[in-house]
Length: 176
Image (tube, rainbow, N blue to C red; front, side, top):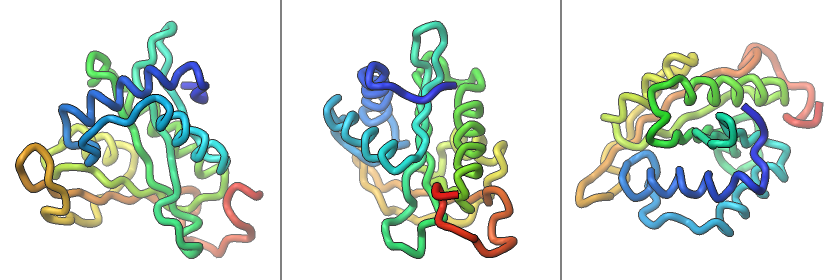
């Protein structure tokens, strides 16, 4: 695991494009270009948030990042994670390693909650991944997406970071 660099973003784009074109993990229907991936990466890292890649000898096997859960100020302690794995590396623990690295980094930054919004209630791999990292299922939004000619649910899972809501914060996250 390491922070993603600009050189990694074409591989990130390729991994994400596969999920957009063939899966329900993303509700985008057209894969964004590399310039858009660069913009997203700059936005996330510009906020001081993590964007990691799993690098296996120069092969980017997956990536993960956290972004604000919502933009309104009261949500400032909550993040949403995103983890995508290259098809030929799925089932090898790459997702768990990425997600655990995100959890640790975001807790260290002072964030208190991490949210997973998982496309398709039948997406057992992602649901099980999040459960194995301490997330609990908190709800299902039925038929909020329409992709590949069918209605698709989202499953929402949540995990406390650090002390969670066990005490009041002393400062904004990422600022010590």
